[in-house]
Length: 338
Image (cartoon, rainbow, N blue to C red; front, side, top):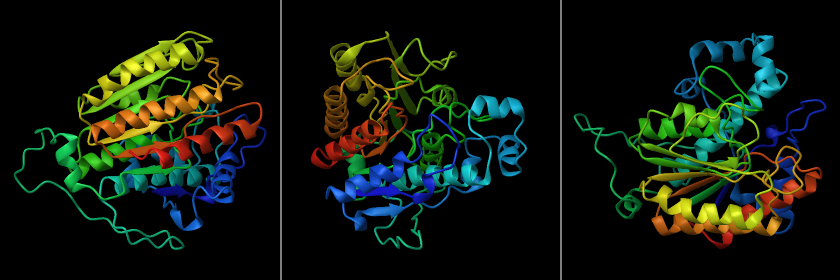
């Protein structure tokens, strides 16, 4: 299994609840504990502005490039603008895109980690092909994909970004960009399993009118964001739901997601449903979060789809708890490959 990461994900945000240091800490913990070797880790390359434009408006991207965000833009994004911030989140978007290309067989297996280069083979439909025809079921699709069936990105899950603005620490919507790039290459049907504590409002909005993309969000209902655009399947849980209620709802939802027959699944494995998270109130235990990961992985494996895992949110009072949850997710992926 490949792991995607860049040391440039650590961004100086000043005094902020978003611990960007967590990405390095997760990477270091995985290597120190022998979960992965340094050779398993690939550095991401930044998403191009053209790739970002598959989701985001030209005006918004221009404002991001030119440091021309308005005070209202900054207030919605809840991050200070800096070149470091823009570059870091372009890299993070590129990391999710690289992970998606790997599991869908669009990236070669000859990587040059130091130079961050990778080759892409076009899989666009032949001229005259009918792009509206659904892809084959996952069992048939497996023949077209690489042998790498799952890839974890130590980053990503920026689900609050809309086409024309960023929100909630999310300047660019990395999963949406990756899906649009895959669709442009002829891989059309996708599913998003968003288990961050917060509703994936930007993602739901982006794909609201695209039946090829199944958006599933299970979140704390009475929490950010106030406006929750409708996704394909939304489960808003009460405050303090705890493990049993959460896992029971997830058990019922995953067969519905996989019935969509996605060619690729994106799993936002947020650490913020944790009981001691500063921005969440679902109060799951670490054991409950591990069981959550197992349920998702088993369902995706049973459906035969490639899987991209991104970390999404995590704001525990002790950053060590957030790191431990993210590390446990990646360990679970390694022991239960999709």
